[in-house]
Amino acid sequence: MITEITKTVSEGRNILMQEADAIRKMSERLDDSFAKAVDLMLACKGKIIISGMGKSGIIAQKIAATLSSTGTTAIFLHPADAAHGDLGVVSKNDTVICLSKSGMTEELNFIIPALKEREATIIAFTGNSRSHLAMNAHVVLDVGVEQEACPYDLAPTTSTTAMLAMGDALAICLMQKKNFTDLEFALTHPKGSLGRQLTMKVADVMVREDAVPLVSEEAPLTELILEMTSKRYGVSGIIDSEGRLTGIFTDGDLRRLVQNGGNFLTRKAKEVMTANPKTVSSELLAKNCLELLETYRITQLLVCDEERRPVGLVHIHDLVSLGL
Image 1 (tube, helix red, strand yellow):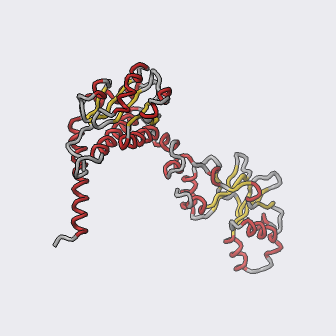
Image 2: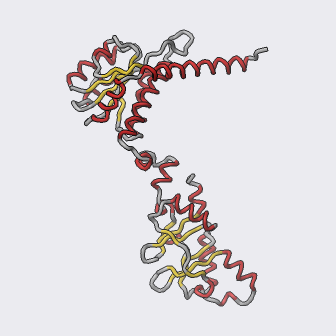
Image 3: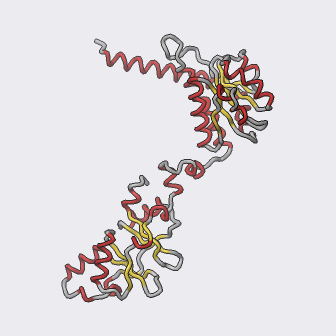
């Protein structure tokens, strides 16, 4: 017995297969027009402008966003707004990509004469090669589908999926032709995981100035313990009279002193410190700093300048919390 859930899953699977099949057929129809569109966009000395009405307009916005994040600056232009003054954004060296399933979208066709007057290059996404839009475009990319996923063949579904896929294909081909690197991608996605991994430095996450636990070599152990515990990092750096780091003392060192017994509280910082501790530069990538902490099985590192003067402290918890 077929349950309602099973029926729904089957219907969903059929819709996905229908849309996937439409993209497969579109890929089989792809011809030299696609290569010409890529070359025109690559050679564009102005802006890439994407325009469309309704659901096609939403897809146009997504394509513009994808292009911008992969090395090709693009903006969305609403065709209705364009007819009421926003055409001023279009100039001679621009390339305008117009999205319309029928190729007969009134708002788009209304602004085509103005686009041609400005000598903008027009690329059409349409399923109708004999439409007004197609006839006036420099390049036509066929995004036609046999039927929408909508059972009444009305709601834009499969057709907008095809447009989106075509936009992705253009964006990624342009990305490859421009040799767009992962570092460049990271620079446009500074809040993303990859962006943080490739751009965030120790200087961006370390604590600074008075928050860094430091005492002089001559400081008594009681002062060293107070500094270490008050700053709450379980560690304190020890510096010489010139402010250079000479040693480090951790809560682990304190536990070992207690276990060994004796009158250790009268000792000075330089007598109980670990000399020449590992440090990092503030210019080191944060992800590389995390790798060092994990390799050496420690929880924090002092950050020093070229003269080995402490300028900060970085803790593993701060790095992990950033998703590095």
